[in-house]
Image (cartoon, rainbow, N blue to C red; front, side, top):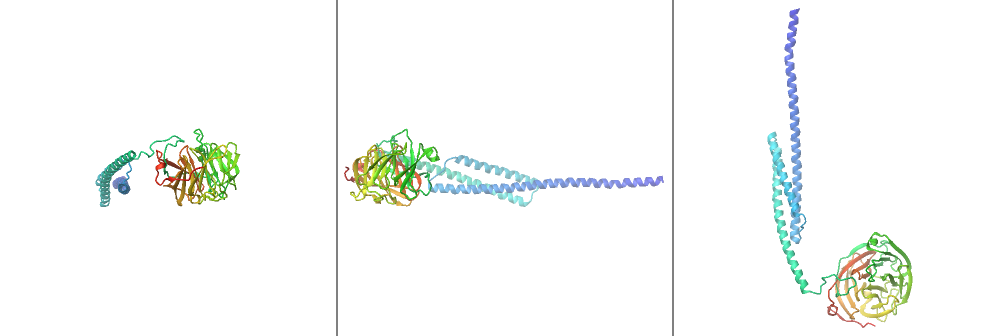
Length: 459
């Protein structure tokens, strides 16, 4: 029995040897599997990195192609954008250098891991794209530098021409004049329109007027807005603003109801509003401090009730204006056959101090304004453009023709008010408040203006 037991124990011992070997082999296999999975995940990461880099390079090349197109467009147009050019080129160079470094690392890692031909071809393709991008970048840098030199040369030539032009044309305005000064010549040009906002009553109130107090009070910056009723005739409400900011923000305003104005020919002069009294040929004066009618006076011979009104602007029989010389009214009479008549008024009494009869038929004109005693008349050329085509100088009694274009946002200019404080036009354009800057010649040249001729004598 003892011998039997020994035999069993030795048999058990001999059976333990292959079991231990199997366990060892299993552990080794598990470690190898883990290492394989780890290396496989690294390969996946490298593949993703290559694909991401390829996408980045494609985007970079597309960006460079766009820059190349922009550079060619700038070269054709003669316009070059200067700001931050050097910074942009350096940024692109840095991106290309970083891409080349990453490609070198990926190639080295692929060789160590024994990566297959598919990734090798991908790396080669990306490397080719990097090289192409570098070539394009260098071309753009050289082209941009050439464009810059060419543009600077053109700019220098233009500055030289401008200097010569100023020397040869001393009449051009090259200095700022004080507010209210008339030490300049005739009107030279009008700026593009600046649209301030829609009138406070809304889009359907297309007719109306607005502007600044034309009295030369440098301490006052009163703005006023007076939309007519939707019928385009009845003037019943207006608002006053003590500053331009208040006007734009619709705040701190006074709103008054009046109820007896006719048409959009009103203006404000020294804190009084002047307008055509409804249904009559009378002039009216309202104190803006109290909204009180302080004076009503007939204008001798003036037609009214839409007789000889402006082209496209009905019910504007009496058109009041203020400028450096004082208060004016523009109108027509049967005696003058519907032609424009301009009278200078006494602002206190509304008495007519002097009258000039022109040879320009009023119903052909779309609007007028006064500046330094000169009457300027406009006519419509299209739905988007007007022309200042006629002028009458009350200082010399001469009338003449000119051609200064004025762009407009909408079709009809219902009112035009000039301000001597800032030499701007305040235009009511189909419900919108619009401003224009005026530029005048430096010296007085009206007497030698082209096409000037003696006009009708004033009375």
